[in-house]
Length: 248
DNA sequence: GTAGCGGCCCTAG
DNA sequence: CCTAGGGCCGCTA
Figure (cartoon, rainbow, N blue to C red):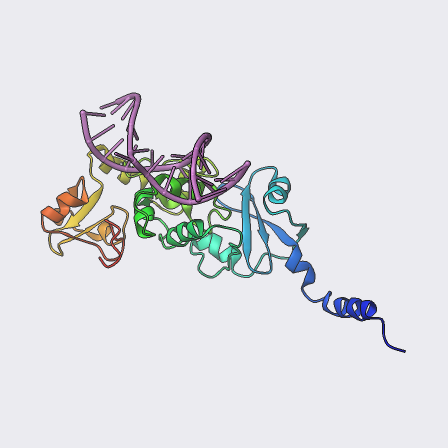
């Protein structure tokens, strides 16, 4: 007699089920240390989908993702090194469900090196939407993977650290923990200096750019605006790209 | 398609 | 200093 198609289909499902089916519908979570305390991290088969600090992790996850959540045996490979070094290129992220705009924002923010900061306006211009400054802030306010996408490295153009999905205090602690020289940024901002140039190279940088930090004091010049630096004959640094131009 | 909302901001006065 | 307005901008209903 002919096999029941329903039973055949179910049998096929049963064969496939043990291998990865759960990971395609559920997420696995771990708890990991960080400078702002214990974090909860949820991963799918695609990568890290959610990073949460403080209480209410499971509820927040379910409300946002609507997936089952099960404990993981161990952290995803690359997660702990990424959190330790502040370089997340080695850990996959699951950013499905985000808008193209938000993905663009997160991708740009991911390029900011540890210990350095860039303005919100820089991110906006970098993704080709120079007017979407506040929208960038809104997108980062919903960053599902803080620390791994280092939105704490995005600060206001006036030198103020600004707000963060985990709160301003957490933002500052994260920056100080990775060696960002906030005292220096504030000192410069108080003098209305937001760019530093070297008169030996003719290059102008954001103050936290590693190139700016190496300028000999005698050759260092501060600028309030990029236009003033340009007028003085400086060109934007190709590393930190002040002025956000795509080609420098 | 589109009106309304709220947004981790920016800059001019 | 401060504050308001941005022919804001993306997202949601």
